[in-house]
Image (cartoon, rainbow, N blue to C red; front, side, top):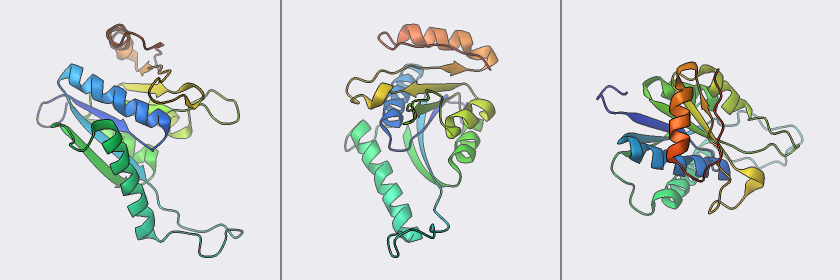
Amino acid sequence: MNESGQSRVVVGVSGSLASKAALQWAAAEAALRGATLHVVRAWEPARRTAPYAVAGARLTGTEDRDAVRDGLAATMLAAFGPVTPDGVTAELAEGAPERVIVSRSADADLLVLGSSPASYGDDQPGSVVRACLKLALCPVVVIGIAHSAALAAPAAAPVAAGREHAAAGARHQRRHAGLAGRVSSR
């Protein structure tokens, strides 16, 4: 719970199909819980250009931040339409995604992340998801999209992580009929 005593769901987004599915899932879960929803887009600006990069191809820091902000706005628009519902906030936070998201989990009741299968055939979650599963200060649910399926019909698979949260994850899976899930403990 946050300082106001209200339940809070935090979702990390990146613009991927999996993170869009995670946002939809988190919004539905926040509504079920009567919780607020905090959408976080972490952004780490590129500090250097690779020596082989085309000169002038790199965005300035301001252009980079603006592009990420516009991407977050587009994600919010796609999820909620032109009017963001009450109880939903969005944040563009500069910093390493795993650090930013873990810090936002401190006052959350649930952290939701999306995870896409890696392009090289490995079904392991990415480094940000792994770091959050290890370090988050609340239960974590990971929503996956199988083979970048269309967002309208995601093959979502929630995973609840945390010793004391396996039962809560199982209850949640029963509430969300149609979502194939598995529960794991840290």
